[in-house]
Amino acid sequence: MRLGPFCDFPAHAVAGFASMSDRIHGAVNLLGRGLLRTLDVRVHVRGAEHVPRTGPVLLASTHVSYPDFIFVQKGAVTRRPDVRFMCRRDVWDHPWAGWLMDQMQHIPVDRMAPAGAYLKAHSLLRAGEAVCAFPEAGISYSYTVRSLMRGVASLARELDVPVVPVALWGAQRIYSVGRAVNGASPPLDWTRGRRVDVSFGTPIHAAPDVDLTEWTVSLGHRLTGMLEQLQRMPEHQPRPTEYAAYHPAHLGGHAPTRAEARTLDQMPRSAVRPTWGPL
Image 1: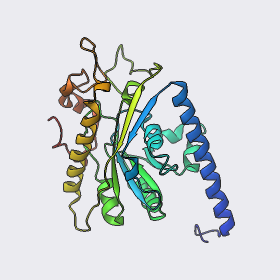
Image 2 (image 1 turned 90 degrees about the vertical axis):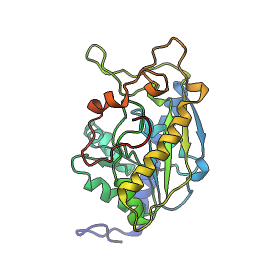
Image 3 (image 1 turned 30 degrees about the horizontal axis):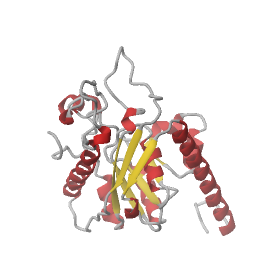
Image 4 (image 1 turned 180 degrees about the vertical axis):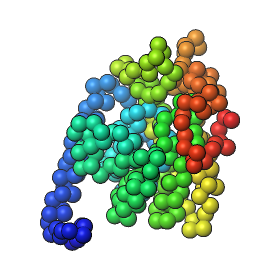
């Protein structure tokens, strides 16, 4: 089996590499589950049956916290224990993190030069992998679905793979963005017993002749509906007199409004502007 222009690898070597990758992935997943138990984080999952057990699938998730990938993987683990995530390129700059991310076949995303991430995701999907993208390309300061990149639509159209929309809520109370206080960003909150809900929607497809912008707008509406369904749950409502910086303003919280968040979100100009949710 040829893997590159300079060398050939026998099939057993490739299988060995794959098994090593799976072992590392399994070990990291185990570590993540241990962290959740340590913090007594209660993850509630709905719709996991929409994630196919085999074959290529593209998960398109909302983004509300830094550790979102932990909760998406936790939600999908009974169906796909080895989801490959598209993550910020600077994660690879930390000692050992880059090596681990490469071993687990996660995908570094440089927003200024996204072609490399697109090609790697394309390759993994063609190989039958499960890939998770965060089409908002960052965490929304308003906790609404912000502008979306067209990459998910393009991959779905080109490869005819199912796209499973994913929404999660509650993780923003653990570690997320927010208004700076005394010049410092919100720290990690070690409070035990937090609840995180992860919801997987029914798979959607992109026809060969679909307009990428129109399809992305449709995805924005779908993700908004799923996210607000979680945000409106009684378990996630702020207390009557609480200053709730973790809850969206249009639902009674004190997070920045979408208008206020525009200067914080720093979206690429190529992103599709929202016509969904609170305007």
